[in-house]
Length: 90
Image (cartoon, rainbow, N blue to C red; front, side, top):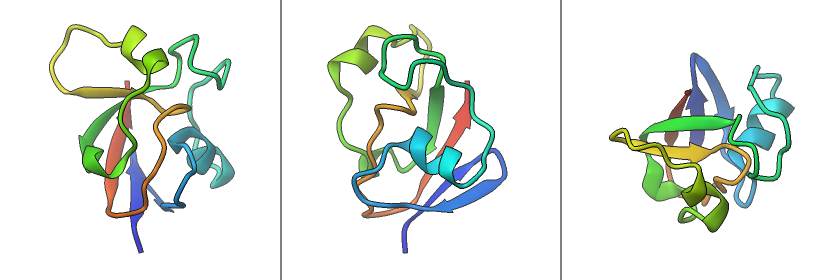
């Protein structure tokens, strides 16, 4: 079973679900506004397991900071379910 971890919370990874939806359904507090990839409020840093998410889409690319490390939009980062993913809210 693959797992998504975020700031001390652990949720079962569900193939095809976005990180934001998984966390909210599990009662994990997450910052968000639009849930459509346009505002950037749900930005998270992927600490490990980024290879277990679908590649970044155009909406996410527009919100990339210049800092190092992989930053994704939780509402757009879709789980492949092939391994564990660890994120932290930006």
